[in-house]
Image (tube, rainbow, N blue to C red; front, top):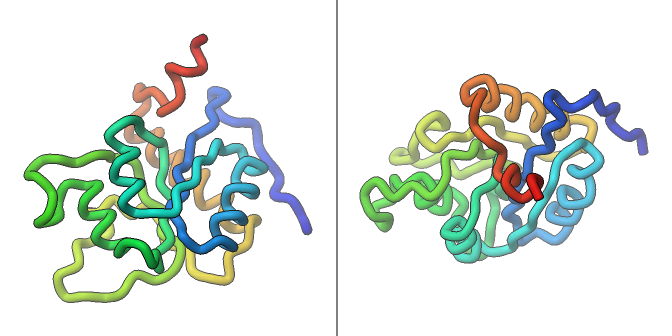
Length: 159
């Protein structure tokens, strides 16, 4: 396997990506491959667990499996953004960009990618050589829009 060439991280930043997937193959691929591309990773296999995690901490990017079996991926993103009818008004839990792996079902009432904060969609087959540059591009866009924002793990690196 050819490893992606890693460029030096700007400002020595290493974004923390939360992977939400109940597909063991995708979860293992991303959790083992993304650190090679310059990312920290955490893995959650349940949409409900992801909702709870955001009560405690934040992440710099969210990689979400569109075909979550445990929880509808679209509803999970709506709840994390605070735009679900089941969420309290103005109760967004994160503003981190989403990278969706797979195809979300098309519905007439689906929010736009911009409204949900979907920065990229990656369709199978998924190759590390393609995923890493996409995620770096998403992070670069986020960093350009938020140049002074600390990374999710910035406080923990100060010790």
